[in-house]
Length: 303
Image 1 (cartoon, rainbow, N blue to C red):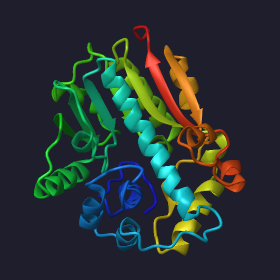
Image 2: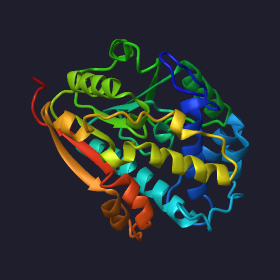
Image 3: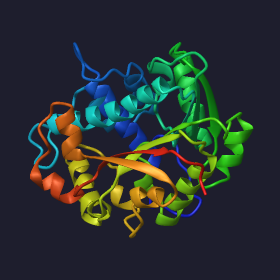
Protein backbone atom coordinates (compact mmCIF):
# COMPACT_ATOMS: atom_id res chain seq x y z
CA UNK A 1 0.00 0.00 0.00
CA UNK A 2 1.52 3.32 -1.11
CA UNK A 3 1.20 6.16 1.40
CA UNK A 4 -1.26 8.92 0.56
CA UNK A 5 -2.76 11.93 2.29
CA UNK A 6 -5.32 10.80 4.86
CA UNK A 7 -4.50 7.09 4.46
CA UNK A 8 -5.51 4.75 7.25
CA UNK A 9 -4.55 1.25 8.30
CA UNK A 10 -5.02 -1.60 10.73
CA UNK A 11 -2.29 -3.77 12.23
CA UNK A 12 -2.16 -6.05 9.19
CA UNK A 13 -1.67 -3.33 6.58
CA UNK A 14 0.56 -0.39 5.66
CA UNK A 15 2.32 1.25 8.63
CA UNK A 16 0.31 -0.91 11.01
CA UNK A 17 1.98 -4.05 9.68
CA UNK A 18 5.39 -2.62 10.61
CA UNK A 19 4.18 -2.27 14.22
CA UNK A 20 3.22 -5.94 14.12
CA UNK A 21 6.63 -6.84 12.69
CA UNK A 22 8.39 -5.00 15.53
CA UNK A 23 6.18 -6.76 18.08
CA UNK A 24 7.14 -10.07 16.47
CA UNK A 25 10.80 -9.21 17.00
CA UNK A 26 10.09 -8.39 20.65
CA UNK A 27 8.29 -11.72 21.01
CA UNK A 28 11.27 -13.52 19.48
CA UNK A 29 13.72 -11.80 21.87
CA UNK A 30 11.42 -12.68 24.79
CA UNK A 31 11.61 -16.43 24.11
CA UNK A 32 13.52 -18.99 26.12
CA UNK A 33 15.10 -18.97 29.59
CA UNK A 34 16.54 -15.66 30.81
CA UNK A 35 15.51 -13.67 27.73
CA UNK A 36 17.23 -10.30 27.25
CA UNK A 37 13.86 -8.52 27.23
CA UNK A 38 10.45 -9.60 28.49
CA UNK A 39 7.27 -8.69 26.64
CA UNK A 40 4.77 -11.33 27.76
CA UNK A 41 2.03 -10.05 25.45
CA UNK A 42 3.82 -9.54 22.15
CA UNK A 43 3.47 -13.08 20.79
CA UNK A 44 -0.27 -13.30 21.47
CA UNK A 45 -0.89 -9.88 19.96
CA UNK A 46 1.01 -10.90 16.83
CA UNK A 47 -0.96 -14.12 16.54
CA UNK A 48 -4.20 -12.19 16.88
CA UNK A 49 -3.21 -9.89 13.99
CA UNK A 50 -2.66 -12.96 11.84
CA UNK A 51 0.23 -12.05 9.50
CA UNK A 52 1.88 -15.41 8.76
CA UNK A 53 5.44 -14.07 8.47
CA UNK A 54 5.18 -12.19 11.77
CA UNK A 55 3.75 -15.22 13.55
CA UNK A 56 6.66 -17.34 12.33
CA UNK A 57 9.14 -14.70 13.53
CA UNK A 58 7.47 -14.54 16.94
CA UNK A 59 7.57 -18.34 17.18
CA UNK A 60 11.27 -18.52 16.26
CA UNK A 61 10.43 -20.38 13.05
CA UNK A 62 12.35 -18.12 10.62
CA UNK A 63 16.06 -18.76 10.13
CA UNK A 64 17.85 -15.42 9.75
CA UNK A 65 21.30 -16.72 10.60
CA UNK A 66 22.74 -16.66 7.07
CA UNK A 67 21.22 -13.36 5.99
CA UNK A 68 23.98 -11.16 4.55
CA UNK A 69 22.50 -7.87 5.77
CA UNK A 70 20.88 -8.52 9.12
CA UNK A 71 21.47 -11.99 10.61
CA UNK A 72 19.63 -13.50 13.53
CA UNK A 73 22.00 -12.25 16.22
CA UNK A 74 21.98 -8.72 14.81
CA UNK A 75 18.19 -8.75 14.60
CA UNK A 76 17.89 -9.88 18.22
CA UNK A 77 20.47 -7.38 19.41
CA UNK A 78 18.75 -4.54 17.55
CA UNK A 79 15.35 -5.09 19.14
CA UNK A 80 16.93 -5.63 22.56
CA UNK A 81 18.87 -2.35 22.30
CA UNK A 82 15.82 -0.48 21.05
CA UNK A 83 13.44 -1.86 23.68
CA UNK A 84 15.83 -1.34 26.56
CA UNK A 85 16.56 2.23 25.47
CA UNK A 86 12.94 3.31 25.67
CA UNK A 87 12.24 1.20 28.78
CA UNK A 88 15.22 2.77 30.55
CA UNK A 89 14.11 6.22 29.46
CA UNK A 90 10.72 5.72 31.11
CA UNK A 91 12.21 4.15 34.22
CA UNK A 92 14.53 7.12 34.63
CA UNK A 93 11.71 9.58 33.92
CA UNK A 94 9.44 8.25 36.66
CA UNK A 95 12.43 8.03 39.02
CA UNK A 96 12.71 11.80 38.51
CA UNK A 97 9.12 12.23 39.59
CA UNK A 98 7.37 12.40 36.21
CA UNK A 99 3.92 10.84 36.43
CA UNK A 100 2.54 11.66 32.98
CA UNK A 101 3.62 9.59 29.96
CA UNK A 102 2.51 9.89 26.33
CA UNK A 103 3.20 7.14 23.80
CA UNK A 104 2.83 8.61 20.31
CA UNK A 105 1.70 6.10 17.63
CA UNK A 106 1.52 3.43 20.31
CA UNK A 107 0.85 0.48 17.99
CA UNK A 108 1.42 -2.77 19.88
CA UNK A 109 3.46 -1.13 22.64
CA UNK A 110 2.60 -2.87 25.94
CA UNK A 111 4.63 -0.77 28.37
CA UNK A 112 1.49 0.35 30.21
CA UNK A 113 0.95 -3.33 31.02
CA UNK A 114 4.42 -4.83 31.40
CA UNK A 115 6.45 -2.14 33.22
CA UNK A 116 6.44 -1.30 36.90
CA UNK A 117 4.83 2.10 37.45
CA UNK A 118 4.77 4.27 40.57
CA UNK A 119 1.36 5.04 42.03
CA UNK A 120 -0.33 7.93 40.28
CA UNK A 121 1.28 7.38 36.87
CA UNK A 122 -0.96 8.03 33.87
CA UNK A 123 0.05 6.62 30.48
CA UNK A 124 -1.68 8.08 27.43
CA UNK A 125 -1.57 6.04 24.22
CA UNK A 126 -2.32 7.75 20.89
CA UNK A 127 -2.96 5.84 17.67
CA UNK A 128 -5.53 5.25 14.97
CA UNK A 129 -8.90 4.03 16.29
CA UNK A 130 -8.65 0.54 14.76
CA UNK A 131 -5.22 0.02 16.33
CA UNK A 132 -6.31 1.17 19.79
CA UNK A 133 -9.49 -0.91 19.70
CA UNK A 134 -7.70 -4.07 18.57
CA UNK A 135 -4.92 -3.97 21.15
CA UNK A 136 -7.28 -3.11 24.01
CA UNK A 137 -9.66 -5.91 23.08
CA UNK A 138 -6.96 -8.58 22.72
CA UNK A 139 -5.27 -7.65 25.99
CA UNK A 140 -8.64 -7.71 27.75
CA UNK A 141 -9.24 -11.23 26.43
CA UNK A 142 -5.80 -12.25 27.71
CA UNK A 143 -6.75 -10.95 31.14
CA UNK A 144 -3.98 -8.38 31.11
CA UNK A 145 -4.33 -5.31 33.29
CA UNK A 146 -2.25 -2.14 33.06
CA UNK A 147 -0.01 -1.32 35.99
CA UNK A 148 -0.88 2.36 35.71
CA UNK A 149 -3.85 4.47 34.72
CA UNK A 150 -3.98 3.88 30.96
CA UNK A 151 -5.91 6.39 28.86
CA UNK A 152 -6.31 5.91 25.14
CA UNK A 153 -6.65 8.63 22.52
CA UNK A 154 -8.03 7.03 19.35
CA UNK A 155 -6.98 9.58 16.76
CA UNK A 156 -4.65 9.92 13.79
CA UNK A 157 -1.61 12.08 14.58
CA UNK A 158 -2.40 14.11 11.46
CA UNK A 159 -5.57 15.34 13.19
CA UNK A 160 -5.84 17.67 16.20
CA UNK A 161 -4.38 15.20 18.65
CA UNK A 162 -3.27 17.90 21.17
CA UNK A 163 -6.93 18.85 21.70
CA UNK A 164 -7.94 15.19 22.03
CA UNK A 165 -5.09 14.57 24.46
CA UNK A 166 -6.20 17.48 26.64
CA UNK A 167 -9.78 16.20 26.51
CA UNK A 168 -8.52 12.85 27.83
CA UNK A 169 -7.15 14.60 30.91
CA UNK A 170 -3.61 15.47 29.87
CA UNK A 171 -2.15 18.27 32.01
CA UNK A 172 0.23 20.53 30.05
CA UNK A 173 1.39 22.12 33.31
CA UNK A 174 2.87 18.81 34.52
CA UNK A 175 6.21 17.43 33.26
CA UNK A 176 5.68 14.70 30.68
CA UNK A 177 7.73 11.78 29.35
CA UNK A 178 7.08 11.47 25.61
CA UNK A 179 7.95 8.45 23.47
CA UNK A 180 8.03 8.58 19.66
CA UNK A 181 9.44 5.13 18.96
CA UNK A 182 9.76 4.07 15.33
CA UNK A 183 7.60 6.98 14.21
CA UNK A 184 9.44 9.87 12.59
CA UNK A 185 10.58 8.04 9.45
CA UNK A 186 6.90 7.36 8.62
CA UNK A 187 6.08 11.09 8.70
CA UNK A 188 6.64 13.62 5.89
CA UNK A 189 9.18 16.29 6.92
CA UNK A 190 6.55 18.96 7.59
CA UNK A 191 4.46 16.53 9.66
CA UNK A 192 7.51 15.61 11.71
CA UNK A 193 8.16 19.27 12.46
CA UNK A 194 4.52 19.88 13.43
CA UNK A 195 4.59 16.88 15.73
CA UNK A 196 7.71 18.12 17.51
CA UNK A 197 6.27 21.63 17.75
CA UNK A 198 3.08 20.27 19.30
CA UNK A 199 5.09 18.22 21.79
CA UNK A 200 7.05 21.36 22.70
CA UNK A 201 3.90 23.44 23.13
CA UNK A 202 2.41 20.81 25.46
CA UNK A 203 5.58 20.29 27.53
CA UNK A 204 6.18 21.83 30.94
CA UNK A 205 9.76 22.41 32.14
CA UNK A 206 11.31 19.09 33.12
CA UNK A 207 9.55 17.21 30.33
CA UNK A 208 11.54 14.60 28.44
CA UNK A 209 11.29 13.03 24.98
CA UNK A 210 12.81 9.86 23.53
CA UNK A 211 12.89 8.99 19.84
CA UNK A 212 15.30 7.73 17.19
CA UNK A 213 18.08 9.93 15.90
CA UNK A 214 18.15 9.52 12.12
CA UNK A 215 21.28 10.37 10.18
CA UNK A 216 20.49 11.72 6.71
CA UNK A 217 21.81 8.50 5.15
CA UNK A 218 19.04 6.54 6.85
CA UNK A 219 16.42 8.41 4.83
CA UNK A 220 17.67 7.15 1.48
CA UNK A 221 15.64 4.78 -0.64
CA UNK A 222 18.57 2.33 -0.61
CA UNK A 223 18.12 1.63 3.09
CA UNK A 224 14.40 0.97 2.70
CA UNK A 225 14.97 -1.14 -0.42
CA UNK A 226 17.57 -3.37 1.20
CA UNK A 227 15.46 -3.92 4.29
CA UNK A 228 12.48 -4.76 2.08
CA UNK A 229 14.57 -7.26 0.09
CA UNK A 230 15.76 -8.83 3.32
CA UNK A 231 12.18 -9.26 4.51
CA UNK A 232 11.15 -10.81 1.23
CA UNK A 233 13.97 -13.35 1.45
CA UNK A 234 12.26 -14.66 4.57
CA UNK A 235 8.62 -14.37 3.50
CA UNK A 236 7.55 -10.82 4.37
CA UNK A 237 5.53 -8.76 1.89
CA UNK A 238 5.99 -5.43 3.74
CA UNK A 239 7.43 -2.88 1.29
CA UNK A 240 9.19 -0.20 3.29
CA UNK A 241 9.98 1.79 0.16
CA UNK A 242 6.26 2.65 -0.02
CA UNK A 243 6.00 3.51 3.68
CA UNK A 244 9.10 5.53 4.56
CA UNK A 245 9.31 9.21 3.67
CA UNK A 246 12.83 9.77 2.34
CA UNK A 247 12.46 13.50 1.62
CA UNK A 248 15.12 15.83 2.95
CA UNK A 249 14.25 17.03 6.43
CA UNK A 250 15.59 18.84 9.47
CA UNK A 251 16.98 16.34 11.97
CA UNK A 252 14.86 16.00 15.10
CA UNK A 253 17.99 16.88 17.08
CA UNK A 254 18.32 20.24 15.37
CA UNK A 255 14.60 21.02 15.37
CA UNK A 256 14.27 20.35 19.08
CA UNK A 257 17.49 22.14 20.02
CA UNK A 258 16.14 25.25 18.32
CA UNK A 259 13.12 25.14 20.61
CA UNK A 260 14.89 24.95 23.94
CA UNK A 261 15.44 21.22 24.39
CA UNK A 262 18.75 19.84 25.66
CA UNK A 263 19.75 16.91 23.46
CA UNK A 264 21.66 13.71 24.15
CA UNK A 265 22.48 11.37 21.26
CA UNK A 266 23.54 7.74 21.53
CA UNK A 267 24.70 6.31 18.20
CA UNK A 268 23.89 2.76 17.20
CA UNK A 269 27.45 1.66 17.91
CA UNK A 270 27.36 3.29 21.34
CA UNK A 271 23.97 1.74 22.12
CA UNK A 272 25.18 -1.74 21.17
CA UNK A 273 28.36 -1.33 23.23
CA UNK A 274 26.38 -0.10 26.24
CA UNK A 275 24.41 -3.36 26.10
CA UNK A 276 27.49 -5.54 25.74
CA UNK A 277 26.90 -6.33 22.06
CA UNK A 278 29.32 -6.16 19.15
CA UNK A 279 28.41 -3.37 16.69
CA UNK A 280 26.42 -4.34 13.58
CA UNK A 281 28.20 -5.16 10.33
CA UNK A 282 29.92 -2.34 8.48
CA UNK A 283 27.47 -2.59 5.57
CA UNK A 284 24.56 -1.88 7.87
CA UNK A 285 26.33 0.98 9.63
CA UNK A 286 27.27 2.54 6.30
CA UNK A 287 23.59 2.79 5.40
CA UNK A 288 22.41 4.35 8.65
CA UNK A 289 25.44 6.57 9.34
CA UNK A 290 25.43 7.99 12.86
CA UNK A 291 21.79 7.07 13.46
CA UNK A 292 20.86 5.92 16.93
CA UNK A 293 18.71 7.21 19.76
CA UNK A 294 17.82 10.64 21.07
CA UNK A 295 16.78 11.84 24.51
CA UNK A 296 15.72 15.46 24.93
CA UNK A 297 14.89 17.44 28.07
CA UNK A 298 13.12 20.77 28.28
CA UNK A 299 14.77 22.81 30.99
CA UNK A 300 13.02 26.11 30.27
CA UNK A 301 9.50 27.08 29.20
CA UNK A 302 9.03 26.94 25.40
CA UNK A 303 9.32 30.36 23.78
